[in-house]
Image (cartoon, rainbow, N blue to C red; front, side, top):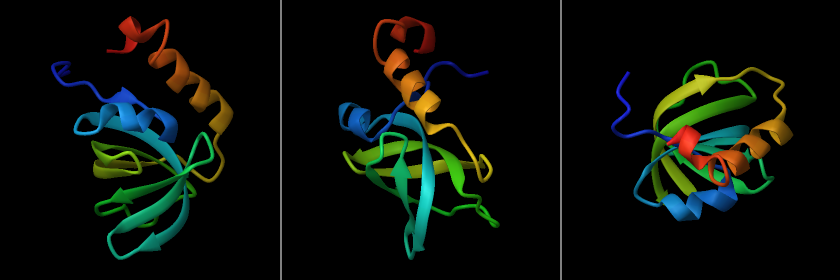
Length: 106
């Protein structure tokens, strides 16, 4: 496994800290648009994910890609996470991965 450029766990609030870097986020798909997907992050904020989503697309997806700006990610990898997902637990994971336990994730 290549660990030279890890993807940071983020929600929408944390995304602004990683513009230009590789990130991973789980979103709830709200709608498809021409450039990708409009979604809701695990902290209930809107995110735009650009790229080619998989077909079929489930209600929740994890994306790994480059944070283009504080509200958008250009996804390189899309993974369907199914139609139910515990967003609260994932949001807590994001907080831990960017706080006291950051050294365990990056």
